[in-house]
Length: 505
Image (tube, rainbow, N blue to C red; front, side, top):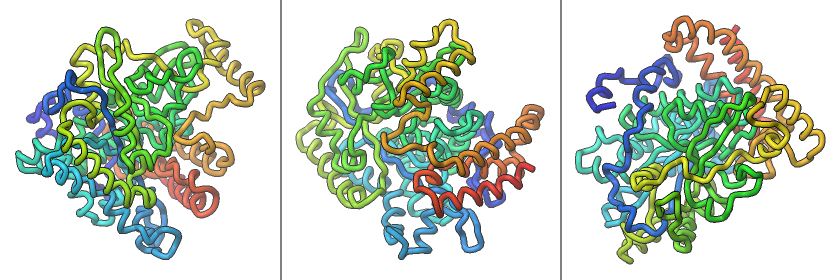
């Protein structure tokens, strides 16, 4: 879509009736996101032939929305931290708020100092709405400085845009495997709506990679198929994937070198239909320490070039971590981020050898050189090979797949359909029936009420009642209401369900 065409689209306000603007302009959003034009290729200052290996770092930022205002209003957990400074680590609230905007300080500083930095940013819709609710224009303006080309002076626009890549995510930080399938696309579109409302359509047009909350990948065949389908329908080219959440098609783990080049994530549903999307692999390790101490750079020093088809490409070490979580990100990351980029600059390696790259930039560079996504090594969600060993993929039926899953659950204690996330020792399903059952009930009621109306008239999504019902449906699916255990957080979920249930009567 051209700049002129984008300028003719309706400007999205961040809020409607005091609620986040997360729906109503689906056709306009799709017209912006569904394109295959290069994003970084026209502006990158890197040349593939000069690169040996690269490192790509992403920062994940999130604060849930909770019904905990002074009169039960929906507020950000960050606001709750400010209002209850003596609870737990809530005294860190101001530092957290600084962390959310600080890349808008660091990137300009590094560029002014002659460095060539890169960063990928993943912010949940909840967090962006919370910053807006709190009037934290300082944090938001720092982010706009490195995001919004139209709001920066022309020189700044050229300076900062190629160095920063935003990644899409689920609006309300829902873990995909336990999210009702009809809500997957609603979360993805809601984030796109709100991001466009904050940063503009041109910035949204450049969002081509997707970062799943909790790095959670579904392994249920139908869920994974619909997830990838929704991502592609919403214009995404690639997905960030945790190393141990995938396997080779024969069930073995990824070969070591395979973790440092793009993979082709395959999905097959209950009737044998297939779909795929490019995946960049986040390798195992202590996520926060790896990014805080810039370990991907040091690991990349030990990597070299690899072959994809007939093309030689640099390896890429990819990591993501919570950008504000704990003292290591608060204190060590600012120190080591600047130190490493100064080291690269001083060695004369800003654009050669071991360099920083963003995900879409890397893919565009290697594909412009002739790398074909069909030649990327294939992988699938962990545990799926066990299903397809029992069911002929070319003659799959829902009954056959369900029977195979039931047999495997009964005979293989290591088999499950809960998917896999950044951690192996935490289930997002077991023990949380008191959250999951209402979550599924509210979703079913929402779709029973509104799907027929939207099918008859797509503008129904602009109605205030639809917005409110959608908001509660998505909020209830936030991972924090399970991750933080039983008690206050499940009480929050219960209250969100109560309010949401009223909207779908």
